[in-house]
Length: 176
Image 1 (spheres, rainbow, N blue to C red):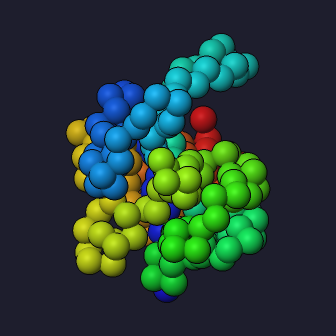
Image 2 (image 1 turned 120 degrees about the horizontal axis):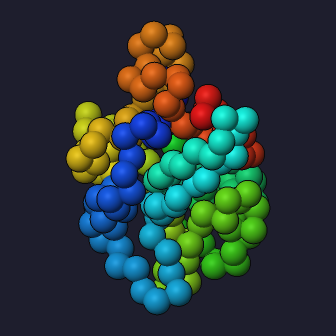
């Protein structure tokens, strides 16, 4: 089994939002007032010894290794996909209790008009079929990459000093 992640190249993201639009289109999700898309765009200002650095971030579900949303769901709607290791969901049994959102350290799970949980699933069905996640495919600057996290460092598509990958429980894995 490969373990996939969607990495962000901080040196290439310009916060154009193409990834967020592609995600909404792929999931047939229209953001209503008071809701947020599966993928969000942020500006980040970091103070460093050399001064301040500015970055654009395109963030969605972090697909945590030990995803607290999975254990937080009393209806067992969330699970790890065995082929991709993405955190995926089936809302058939969702009772809309918001336990998954409360357990998530990022507050990622959202709730649709029907009261059931929705979130980024890494486009795991697309990946099963040999395609890229919609956000990765849509990025005109190549800032998002689908990576095999277990591949050797020299095979990673983004140079370590520019890469941002979120890991379990909020640890930023970056040299920035």
